[in-house]
Length: 255
Image (cartoon, rainbow, N blue to C red; front, side, top):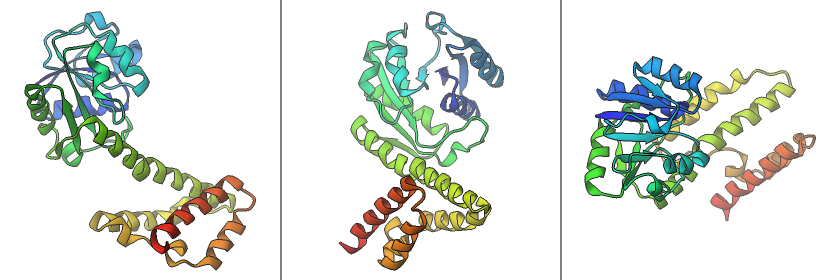
């Protein structure tokens, strides 16, 4: 399929690479910033533009891959009213694109992306939504050129999915950062935790999270919980975080 990507950040970069790897033709990259537009276009071997009124008109799908706050504004400036226009957001409703085109949809890859970190799309879920059945079929063809995990999910379910993803990814990574801070205060390396992190992830990939929960709160070991809280007394923010999460675990397993 022929694709134009509007956005040159993490998502736009990885989607561009994946579209080409899947046998599609990326015709053009749009970005407000000349430097980022030329950089991604150079990598993908396509044209670029910094003006919405200079978008290539020959694409099958136009993919908005920008921050949530910028989607509505970019859609309002989209000049090709009869072309299939989609965004890649987990939380933004599909209807925000109605000012841009009569044909709208969502192409949401459920993954965390950083430009410098390669990813394989083969097992990445792509969640689709479209206002018209024929456009949904077109998006499914495009998605299946990237991955075997393609799902039809409406805006409401996608928003809840994104909340779950924040817990599973962003919050978990923040816990890693907190753990790293605690270790650094004692002059200990984060490498001490990497085997534990790997084993925890391995177990949850093979079973249900409820069944894999361990730790003092799961065991209802109040002496250990109190000791940990005491050790965090000099950092009230981390202490509050520890107590709140421990209470949530206690409620889930011992209510």
